[in-house]
Length: 393
Image 1: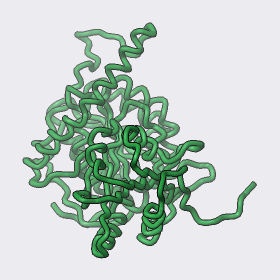
Image 2: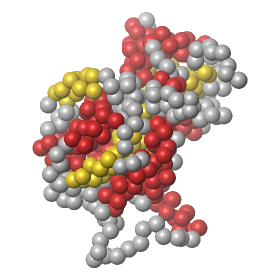
Image 3: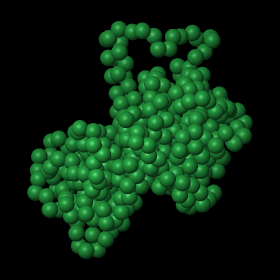
Image 4: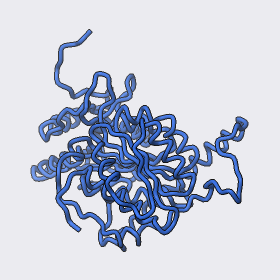
């Protein structure tokens, strides 16, 4: 079913379809609280008439995730949505859901964390949760949002994984603009998503304890178990993509996707909607005879180090475009790529911080980044590509 709709509508529709697909098992549960630019997702879910499920408006984001935890530990398919400071308020329970291995899916509409208050896009909100034992997916387009939510349920609920997942996309740029989207029919979602099974759900006939006090050795073993589950994600994701193609007739992008990388000497790394802008600049440079390519990163947790090393093995210069910053260090995607490419001494690897707080990342801005990268003879400190401003202090 093709529909011209907003990214928020697409996200709400697919979350609802996924919840409805579990009607013959233990149904679905969602707790929600409004925050710009996410609110429309929860409004859609509140208006959906589930055969077996409940969407509950609660008094805070902390409670929204608490309700998801309760629903998931009872065996229901669970999901919610949030943004920015709402995610920060939710953070304690985000950790709990990850550490309890509850396959909650969270649609996160990226927005700058305040103060100062800003409703525009910035990846700092979801990336602040990068160590919470959640899978992280970053979506370029409206279609990718719809497809990735289904992939997230399929991977998160897989018995080899059993970890929650964040599906992130740009506030306003994706959430509030409209584009043609192939929304799945309910019958196809039913085929694609098997009944949700949480093997450690609470059961009167099988009493157990959740979140007990343990020894340091137990905690270390627990963290290793989580890490090993993360390491299995790329293979499970590939299987989920193949099965997606069998049901829906097309295959979504994987953990990473290269664009014109086959002979590229200069590569720009991007995520979310910036990837669309970079793709256009790459095409222009290719017409001018330059060997330029792009690497789009969709899966941030677990970070696909091996795949990235393979994709960039022929590159001489790599520029990472970060719409985020770890203050006092640099762009967060760049930091991860530095770790992945630590054994590549001759590579020029440069970080560019731009678009923070929702600033426009135009083709001209990407051209400027490329010019800087091509002129470099060695890597340097992270480069801030921001407009001049009068300092407040």
